[in-house]
Image (tube, rainbow, N blue to C red; front, side, top):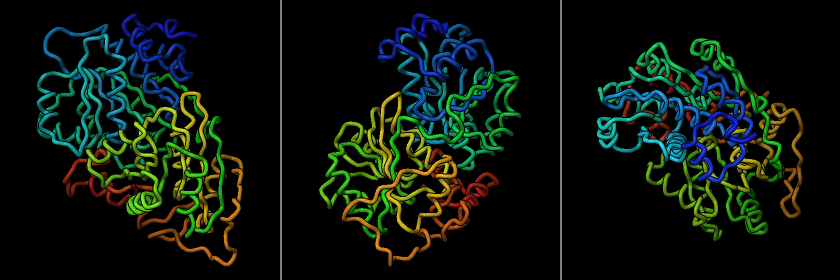
Length: 435
């Protein structure tokens, strides 16, 4: 099947060809025709499946076909959980809309609000935003959402994980009742299904990635190792394998900073990316990583979704995540767009319960290989996971760092900088601290 057969107009087909694509992915084949027909949609699709183009292309065509006369108003709203994902969705809108006279804008925290206000005053057709910064603009009266025709909730499960449900409901109250709604989620928890039931009208349902399954093209492997030798093993793997581009996940911000510094001392160019980093620092680190100037990018789970890195060959779980589903999202950074990838997990005795939880989710045991010279010492006893007790039976602890539910997002995670108090704020603070 070709893009032409999906009913896309010439300007979009030209943009797709300019981007180097000739065959639609499964999610694009399934999503584009019903969205073009005006249907609501509930889509199960992991990152790396081409879902952004799956909603961006038909969204652009529907807006181009029904452009009203007069001043520009926001006609399409895409909500995302993080500013990285907002920026990347905005890039896709620009890429695929290059031959259409559409104006788009990304709104997120961590940067000055004034240039965003100026851009909104000039008129915007498509707005890509994180919930917190969007509500900042709504409170200041700098954005009008009363003419939105299409709403997209991208990575809806991640937004709920980050405590954005109250903010999403506040945004929904600012939108007209009659609109097209598209909800994309990697997993379908009861909370997601409840949100979909209240939001979508007779939706088209598609599921191109079976729930919580890891990409088939990803070679997954576990290396048992003592906690004190993880960094040494990681450096050896990168050096001996001549890995030129590696994304490494830690559980905490402090751990990410410390590991990046240690890798630098080992002679490996490394940078850390997490919620405490400024927007400029995060943007530079990601750009340097993509350009090959930085060999190792160390990240917390804020980067598990939304980082779109072409041909990323290696992902390493330096520390296993507390929530098994986050393992799937982490390793989904590789093996994208039909390319093969490798996901390696360095597992110490403290993390055996976490590993069992991941294997239960995947429905199989992960292949394990003990590397010569890095055999775990049988005398080492398990210790509690950093800043919190170990999860037992797959149930994560409450309280402390490394939690499954992050606290109120900082500006860096798409939240409202400087927000204090309020029901939504308290809800997010109760959720714990991760990333």
